[in-house]
Image (cartoon, rainbow over all chains, first blue to last red; front, side, top):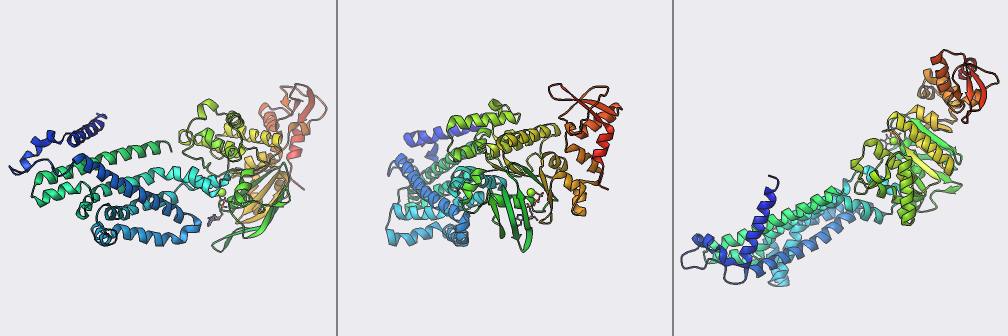
Length: 243
Length: 312
Ligand SMILES: Nc1ncnc2c1ncn2[C@@H]1O[C@H](COP(=O)(O)OP(=O)(O)OP(=O)(O)O)[C@@H](O)[C@H]1O
Ligand SMILES: [Mg+2]
């Protein structure tokens, strides 16, 4: 029974790969959703390359958000940086509450159409979960452990790198996981400003009233989210087991 | 030598350590006792500057402890934290190796030291070395915490209730091992405990604290015979006084020429144990032998009772 979840995930991955590599195999399944004379499988570009582009965009935005949010959280969790805590928290919160669509609209006049506005929107949107989880984990470490690290004569940097970050890692990873999943879904709107993401498939479907397009775009994004979420959860469990 | 000179720590307008002055002679054990919240931990932590005092000064071998960076000071001073504070993501061996690694010992020397300390504290090095702290019992964790404090062979050792979680047998063994280590390396130890038996067993001098103030600092028998305040007397325990006096000395101190019947008593056991033996076997005297079996005369009930008698 315990093998079942792995089996299902393996199956999902296999289905996704088949669809991306040989899209025609899924045509019979999607056929009922398209009008009789309309194309069933997205035909304005390769699904595989769109997916790769989509993932790269999310990867780039989340990496940048991770670096910035983790650094910021480390800074404000040090005694010297404590006074910046309220400021950083409101900055990060604004990033989260400002709708990504509005960010796109504001960014396009400045940086032009394409990848850039999407990256900016995803970056801002992804900061909060990572910042909050890093800050929480760094400030709630067991007191005796942190004090023991001081007591053995570790410098501030040694404590951070050898004790605090390793112990905080599982919670930081959970913040990153949340951020990635949000970004995977949000990235689709990047296609409204000509970024190459899976949103293209959905938008094309909406414009030509082709439900098959909409569904296949949505399903690919959904499958990616589930698989990546699971992968990162497994990674987290690995780090928890070690601590 | 550790000179604590007029040290005060104030939290929220309240002195939790209040103008404490005491000098701990080199190569001796000072034990701090006192009620919960009386400032014992805070006092201890000002020695290695985990806490900075609001007034006063602490000198180690004549040198102000603020002349070197805090982290360097702490590498030289062993600290067994209250509640062990082991690093959960590091193995037992890695935990013990913390300070040797920080001060750059080579691998072989560190590994040998880890093995030696684990063995000393009755933990199989091959079995426990690779384990993580959460795979240990509370008593085992505590011994590892003490081993970590001892690893770099510090001259000064601060121990905050280091044996609280140990069962009586392992605790007695750990106390004796600590004294052996202390003799061997000439370590100066400050130890905090709630266990008065432990205090009397280990201490060259006992400090009694109450509400941040040092009430008395002196050799154990001074605390028994001349308690400075009623609080000290209560800490010592009025009904325990004669036994405390006997527990501090060895039978050899009371051995006198003569002979007695029955099984002999080792010269190295405490006078309290000798009294118990005489009472248990209904004798008024017993022969004393040295550890190599040589006759050392006898010890009498009368001498023991005399020794246990209070002043006046
Ligand atoms: N960082 C701190 N901030 C505020 N108050 C503190 C702090 N550390 C300790 N105190 C207070 O100082 C007093 C003394 O604390 P301390 O830990 O030294 O007591 P203790 O004698 O070690 O007690 P115990 O036997 O329970 O360990 C307590 O009332 C405690 O609440
Ligand atoms: Mg304490």
